[in-house]
Length: 290
Image (tube, rainbow, N blue to C red; front, side, top):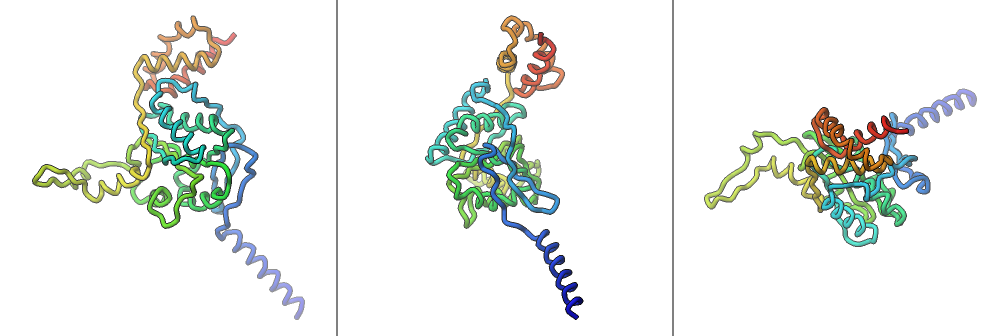
């Protein structure tokens, strides 16, 4: 009888262990000394964790050219945040490859010595934002939760989670946490022609958006600071190319000679962006290295 009971007990313990392994677990703290940047990752089991980024991109504010106004706004807001002054959640929108995410990484490197840290969260994991905020709320550092290339389709769960944490939830966000998001969509959601039909016009000429349009705007409005990025002109593109070539120790005469090749490179890719300029500079510097 005792032997039978012990077998049942062992099976019960094994079953409980298996059940516990699939139940939601409280988010643990990472090694905060391991890095200045972290990624939130979910395992196949569904349990999430903060993983230190071992090799943080060495992006510097001085390296980012032709986006002076945008740089000033983001740097000022970040500096206020690090100093414990009022600061806003930030939405960076506009043309691809114009320096949106690079600017955030550069601010991290600029203010890391003053306690700034970054946590990158994928769109699919935004539903876990409240857990992430709870983990860092008692920390002395300041945390930017970074959502790169953010956009939503109708009905995605992360949309409401982000909307609540930005503004409107009963539980307020921690004062040591800000959301910085980049997107190619100004309002983060797809916009359709038929939605224009929901606008109403009053007798005095006022225009009122319909409920569908209001819902799309409501998320982006919760970001206190909007920063827009625009495609570069030819001269701006060449200035960025020269900056990157210089960073790769290409001589001034060679930089001037590279201008025609840089323009062809951009033409072939259909874009004069900072990303294209960086890619050209890497290719050119590698080919002409002694």
